[in-house]
Image (cartoon, rainbow, N blue to C red):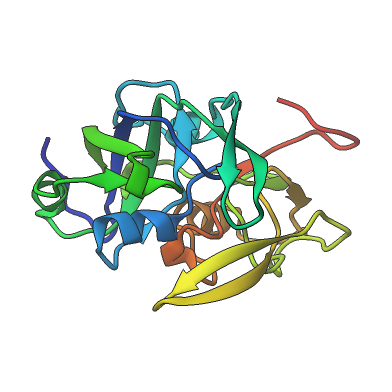
Length: 240
């Protein structure tokens, strides 16, 4: 699988789970991938998917197809004895099929580096064998080949973002806290979680905004924050 030369290149990778997973069922943070690979790479968040391979998208819309079609993880509950509280504690695990990440401008030999790793795990319980994965497929993508939208009314968040962008209208939105580890230190980030949409202000450069969302040009974008796609909805409501 050869890469195409451009100012920006994206490597889309797909890991298949070989064991149960304990952790967030919405997505895997980009920081978790950096930790699992021990590499300071620029990455997206990991999206759980039922796809067994990835493909080279032929358009801006097709680029987000696998990112928008997330798989629902069903929880499986079990009980353990907590020796600290001396009580039975309910825990849960998931059985995802695969997870996909997008790496921006990674080293040319990164696939070899990943394949040389003896173990790649995500989530909790790694010392017990949970979250074990294997790299099964990948493709290189040149985002310069896309025809970016020139008309759009809204952005929809595909990953968390720290601040509402200046090019959209600000209004009340859902917010959460997320734990972020950096150099061994635990930080608590105030985030705007994915799935929410915002109306774009009039007179803005739509093409530039669409590129910004695809390449995650936002604060902590190298950890996966700030990914969004554009939609053109009719006035008065959402549309296709």
